[in-house]
Length: 400
Ligand code: LMR
Image 1 (cartoon, protein in one colour):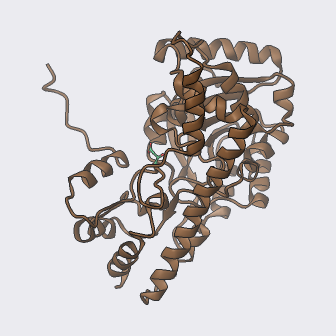
Image 2 (cartoon, helix red, strand yellow):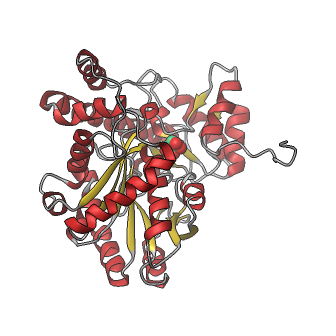
Image 3 (cartoon, rainbow, N blue to C red):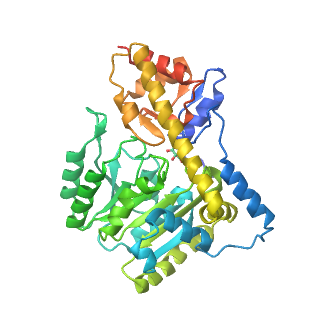
């Protein structure tokens, strides 16, 4: 039956883990997928998550289906976390929101919603580069994917002029995907002043912002600081879509906890959008899973656990920042002639090394270090035990 089905390539990110697992070297390091590891390189379940889970289990809840749009206490608290306690659209009751299967699921709802209902365009512009999965998500949703300038190879920084130029050159009312903070894969974010300018250009062109927020709290360690771009855009009156993930900042990866929300003009519009979200979600997966949402809801609403969680998010962000400095210092100590400042300047889970795909292959082949072929490393996988091997290997493959 399936003789016409061609073999496809492995996933550019999750496929790295498969290659890593096959390597028997004790020195091997997986810096592919963005999943936080503790100081000993082990998967990390946040103590606040364990405590919230204990609380949820002690409640002996039933296992009934959630509503199509998920657990209301969770989505409300998640919206307040992202949009802020003094958010106008929230207090005016004009944010349509649904629980999603983490960030990817939220993006998939966004793609489907835009493809079906956005009246002005069937294309979406994503930064170049962007998270590898963005492109198939939007394509499979029925949108055409185009790119705008983002990364400047020469400076290993933001191509701000190119970005603005491209935003201005797009047709009016284009859909534009923005990474709220901790841009994946580059770790390069606009400054607050640059975000203000981006918002102005988007407004003057009437573009529609779709904001992917997978790393709230993970970039700087402060939720409010990382929420700057989103909240600024909302204050400026953009009616945007937000996709929110709790995979990284709560470490709830496999629980698939996220939200999809639409800032509407008024309550009446919100009610219509809500009804269409339900019509989209019901045939996709009916309704979302309950356990992770209960855990996240507890972390967001229980005062004591919330404070503990925020401190733990900061702890993760700080360890990553610390590993960036250590890697940078070691490269210098080893006598690398290359400029590695970007490792320290970039933010969030990833560092974009600015090395070639061949150098990436060499790191895997000769040094048992696995990363995506675009030269991205998950700094969350770097520890004091493996950082020297990483620095030495990186120095070797970039020495000439
Ligand atoms: C990543 O970019 O590594 C993460 O967002 C995980 C994923 O699903 O790709």
